[in-house]
Length: 183
Image (cartoon, rainbow, N blue to C red):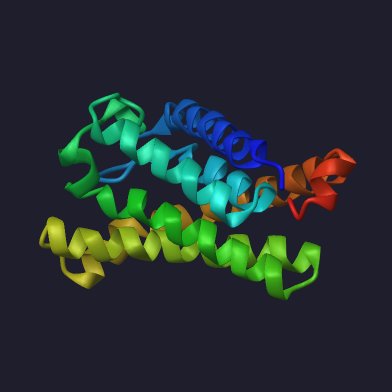
């Protein structure tokens, strides 16, 4: 058994968490919840690496924010960011990764990328809206109107970009990754 594989995957997860932090700095404020590059990065992570590596990447990213490093959109960090009004979107990243992974296990490659990312992005938005209801005391109608609807078209565009990019990356993965169950 190769004892370096878990360490290699953890290092890759940490690198992906840094990439996610960089993408979080791409922000367009459009109300209570900004439009960010985070979900684009999460979609790529979910589409390219195994579920466990993606989960580690999201976990590392959230841990960095929790300890005060300003990795989230608008340079937010700490407990207030994770449990404030936009926290549900951050926690929803786990759901995004797991849903794409589930689709990758059960559907052909291209279908898995499309369906997985559409489903993952939608559920991630709904997790954010649900948290808006709880943390910001919004009604479901307000949470959906402010926390989901404005993001549907940008989300669809991000999914298209993710699918195109992920497909290109997956075609170019070295053979050792393909043989080790990386895909």
